[in-house]
Length: 232
Image (cartoon, rainbow, N blue to C red; front, top):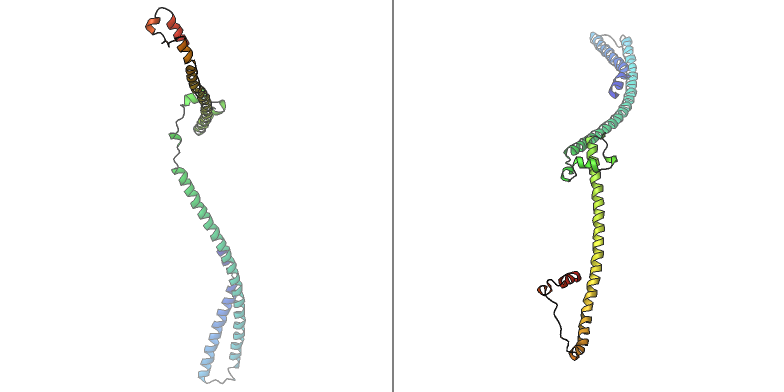
């Protein structure tokens, strides 16, 4: 565009053509003067020819000034067009850089390997039967269906994780209670031992001997076995 505009504006051509034409005329005058000088004509007789040559020199000088002015204008105009061209080249480089960036991003997307196949999801029938209605619209595409299945799986795993954490908390609470009961029962052992030692003189006075609990064979058919099992 800039080069076309530059070529359409031709202010140098008229002055250049006139300068070339004047140079040709001046060369012809000089050649004629040399020819007349060689033929023996006097300078006085060559005055009209020399006057015409001087007039051509004045014109040539004028055309030269015009050419210099137009050259300066063309130089400034060329600098302006060069600046515009540099800006366009910079914009082109930016666009090419963005193009390369988008091409790389597109290739990265194509090369991306999703890990959705590594996730164990419930089968589609179970999903359609158990998932909320917001996830099971029949108008959804296959892509949206997979997204919904992943969201449903995420929510289910969060729910199950919360249940596991709750059960772990209840387990810790029960273990704490069992520990307290165990410590309480273990604390009774020395008390029973002290009680046994304290009542030993009384047992000796009344000649009370320790008795062993009856065996299963001894209690068979007497109903004692049932009572023992009930107590245990």
